[in-house]
Length: 400
Image 1 (cartoon, rainbow, N blue to C red):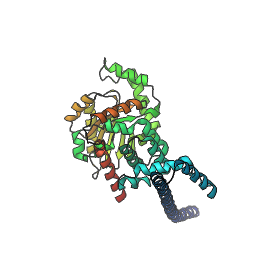
Image 2 (cartoon, rainbow, N blue to C red):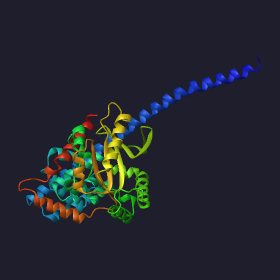
Image 3 (cartoon, helix red, strand yellow):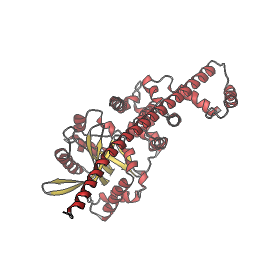
Image 4 (cartoon, helix red, strand yellow):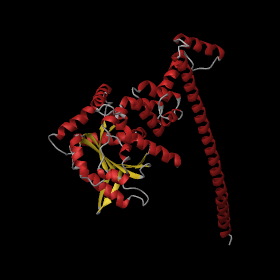
C-alpha cells in the first residue's frame, strides 16, 4: 500500500495540470481574436486615410487643371502656389511644384475614364498611382495595371518589376494558349489566370546552359537524361523552391503552394510531379511540369497522366478538375496549337524566361499590332477577356 500512494498522487497532480492547461488555451484564442480585430481596424483606417489622400490629390489636380485651361492661371502661378503652401503649412510635405503638376496630370489622365476605373484609384497608394501614371503610355495600359495591382496586391517594387517584364505588352501580343477542355471545364475566362510566359530572371540561371540544352534537342530530341539536362533541371527546380515567394508572385495571387516532387502512385509504381499548386479562384489543383528543353507534343502525354491521377486520387469532391501547365524553356506556337487542339485535358503550354524581355522589341511589336488593327477598333478589345475575368474575380472576392 505504501508503494502505491505516491503513484496515485502523481497521477492526480498530472490530471490537475492538464485541466488547468485547457482554460489557458481558450484565453489565448480569445486574445488572438482581439488582435485580429485590432489589425482589421488598423487596415480599415489605413485604407480610409489613403482614400482621402488620393481624393485630395484628385481635387487639387482638378482645380489646377480648370484654372490653367481657363487661362486664369499661368504655369508660374503653380510655382507661387507651391511656395505659398510651404509657408502657410510648414512641415507639410508633398506639395512641391513637381507634385502639383503630377496631381494635374493625374486628374487629366482619368477625368474621362469610367467610374469603375476611377474607383480603383483610391484602392492604391499614391506611390502606386504615380508609377502607373508615369510609366503607362496608353489608357488601356493604365487600366490593365490598375486592375492587376489591386487584384494581386503588388508592392510598388513588384509593380515596377511588372513594367520591366512588359506584362501588358505580353498580355496583348501573346495571351496564354490553353486547350479547349480547359475553357469547357473552367469557363471562358479561366485562361486569363495564366500567362504565355513566366519570367524567372530572379533565379539568375545561366542562360548559356539553357540555350545549349535547347540546341542539343535538335540532335537528341527529348533526351532529358543527358548530364547537361539533369544539371539544368536541378538548377531550375531547386531555384524555384528557394525563391518560392517570388515565384508565387509571378504566378499570381490566387496560387497556393501544395508540394514539390508530389508523390503519385499508379498501378504499384511511384511517380513524382515536379510542382503542385492550388488556385483559389478556379478552385482546383494546378500541376506544373518543368521542361528544360523545347516543347515536344509527347510532353502532354505525361502531363495528362498526372492530371488523371490527381483527379482520381487527390482531388476533393467540391473541387474542379485539375489543370496542367507545361513550363518549357522554349516552344513553337504552331506546334503548341496543334498539340492542344485535340487534347482532352485542361492544360496549357508556357515558356519560362531566364532574362528580362527586350522592352524596345516588345514596344515595336505592340506598335505593329496597333498598325495591323482595323480602323475604328480599340486595343481594349484584345484585353477584354483579361479585364472581364479580373472584374469577375474582384466581385467574387468582395462577396466572400
